[in-house]
Length: 203
Image (cartoon, rainbow, N blue to C red):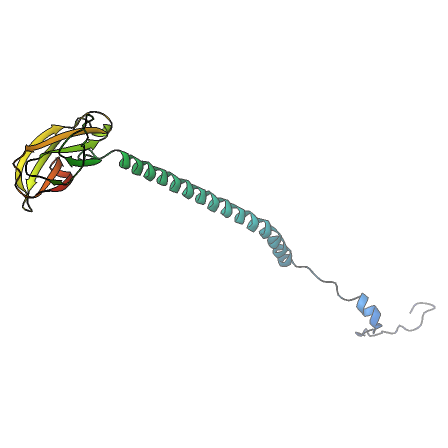
């Protein structure tokens, strides 16, 4: 035994809870531990917001472009349709002829128009038919038919070339007198189809 020392006492260590005042406990509470998972989640949220905005902008731009392209395509289609309609309205098809006017009379003026348009005639009248066309029809050949009754009994037929010029008048002359009383038709035919006709009566 060493000099100047008393007997050695062994003190047992026990777990003793030291009560702290309430305000000390609040201050010395366990610190919040931020895990790696929390950190990754926060970064994911932070990155997702601008990415979503960019995606929305991209979709809006694409949709807008598609809308403009669709509008342009519709405008082109409308323009083409209007041009076709305009052309059809002014220029007849190759197998058609546009007869603007068709009049009958028993006398002609110096400009080849009928002196007094009528659809009633006497048996001794010379009947003229005057067809008016524009410059687009110049040079076409038409067939003129004078027929009688509902069964279209043929009285006479002739082939004529349409007069050249705008508002040109092509004159057809029926027989000079000798018309039997009854109803008649005068028809202008082109390529086997009726272009225009007029009905008249002899009394």
